[in-house]
Amino acid sequence: MIDRGLDGDGYIAREGSLARVSAEFAPVVDAARERIAAAFGPAVLHGAYLYGSVPRGTAIPGVSDLDLLLALHRPPTPADRAAADALEAALDSAFPQVDGVGVLLFDTGTLLSELERHDLGWFVACLCTPLLGEDLAERLPRYRPSSLLARETNGDLALALPGWRERLATAGSDTELRALSRAVSRRLVRTAFTLVMPRWNGWTSDLTASAEAFAAYYPERAAQLRLAAAVARTPTTDRATLTALITDLGPWLAAEYTAVHGEKAPRP
Image: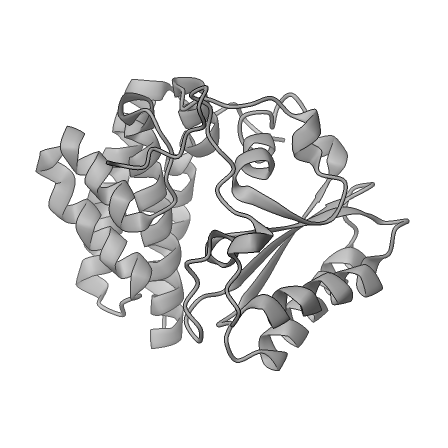
């Protein structure tokens, strides 16, 4: 039976938990909790969350990264960003089981705003696992796999395409190409999945499952999406592959997305 990621009432279930963190990554999570509290403090920090493969229990030592979101009482400052950058570097260097650490910073006003209700709000409520402080999910609605959710999460793919083309044209190293391929392929797979999410009627963060869900509705593009899922797992330096994803699959997906779900509400 396919796991559709829904609870008994048909709402998207929160996908991660601290109980799913594997033994290899438990010390990283403990250190992250301590260092976040020390770096920000209760006057600034409202709460901290994990997201991604670590709280889902699918992280691979030495391969997976650690993803964190910090909710602040007020809008982030340059000093906050510098503290987050220092936190990323410290955790990444201290724990060989993680291959990179990323920290997102948002204020609670933004996370709870009406504009972000079906994007960042949904992200916190369904994809983030509480690590410190009050859980903002208690102040957010439950979510179904709707066209509105699809539009507000990934209805802005077209805005990313010019930047991707520029990065591909100017990339001068394998490191840059691998970073670009990882970002592009993950975004494409997630966008392709949310394109069909309301029809599939469920949620998954698994890249392979996402590609297969998409393939059932767009078999003519299935091979490209499976390629993107493979690149998301193992980034490539092959320019021909990246060109195909960025200049062929990307524009088609952006146009189809707009036709099916509309464009995401503009952000300031």
